[in-house]
Amino acid sequence: MKFTSYQKFVVAVLAFIQFTVVLDFMILSPLGALLLKELHVTTKQFGAVVSAYAFSASAAGILAAGFADKFDRKKLLLFFYSGFVLGTFLCGIASSYEFLFVARMVTGLFGGVIGSISFAIIADLFPFEGRGRVMGIVMTAFSASQVLGIPLGLYLSNRGGWHAPFLMIVAVSTAVGALIAIRLKPINEHLKTPSDRNALRHLFKTLTEPRYFWAFAATMLLAVGGFMLMPFGSTFSVYNMGIPLEKLPMIYIATGVSSFIAGPLLGRASDSIGKYPMFCLGTTLGIALVIYYCGLGITPLAVVIALNIVLFIAITARMVSAQALSSAVPDPGDRGAFMSINSSLQQLAGGVASSAAGFIVVQTEKGPLEHYEELGYVVASAMVITMLLMFKVNRLVGAKLAAGKVVAPSAAPATE
Image 1 (cartoon, rainbow, N blue to C red):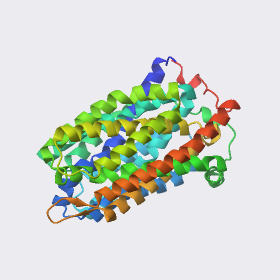
Image 2: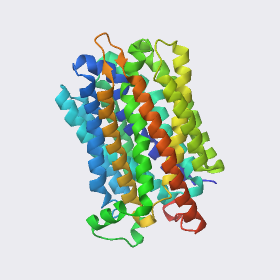
Image 3: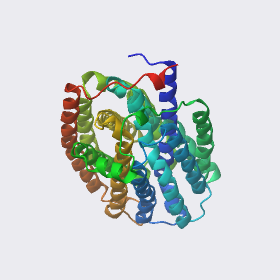
Image 4: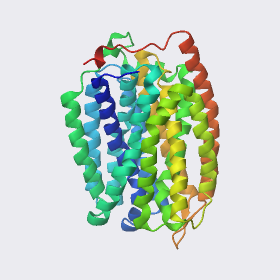
């Protein structure tokens, strides 16, 4: 399947948007050890900071869902991306735990909706048969944030304090926003599809549609792993596995490069062998690694890097295939609302998960975390249940494909 030059531009700009949004969230993990020390916060408070973004993003997703299919997606994207930049700037000037907590809420209110808009755009402009490839490229944003963003963020935080990485994100995001405003064409083909003009009725109709339930449930559990493990990842590496703080960028760079290479390949593979088989492969490998990894003590740096590489490849396989499969669930007129609700529920589940992790994991007076192994078992259990839920989603999508209800999008918005 060949893409036009404009379609390639759309994929590139969406990937760059995801890069800035993901980096804004992920930067808290490597900064965790610094924030615990400099702001004098406990693990519970740090978990609350992560949750503040998630809970506000969840609320924003629900509020935006009723309107998501009633406006040009380009205008929606610019509105929420501008708010995201503002929230990140507030993080960059935060001077206390309370200020940072509020700043994360503002960032989440806007940033949490951007992903759903991006995925709706992908479903609007690209046929199902090629969405694994597109998702694989867009999801490399997670990898790029590790390869480029997180090491640079750690470097800037070591030189200019923990505020510097957030200000860096503001600068990059402002440039991306200007590019969207200038080059991205209006995306309004969905407005030609009849839908309920009442926002509340449209929200309720989408939220209560039985066919969408399984995808919503799977998405919520899909978020549990990342939100539970990642916020304390750097702290676990430093205090439990004995990795020096200055060596952390090596782990992020190595895992990021491998995931960056693997993302597009896994996307193509999911289009070839099937989205659900790819999801199952990634989940099975992920379960084994999570259980093993979370029980480790002092570990050589090379072993930690190798384990992280394989784990992130497994996570990438799960995320790419799950997003591509779920994109075929909603009807065209419900696509924006479905994606917003899906994102909202994901953030809600993530907020609960990160808060729960803050209560499960305890940092001792000497530094090491306790009960991280139990956290691994909780995450592995959620992964098993998610695989069962995605089986139902796969059957629903298969039935739609057999009935010819998953149609290729109009080529009009994506022409030269």
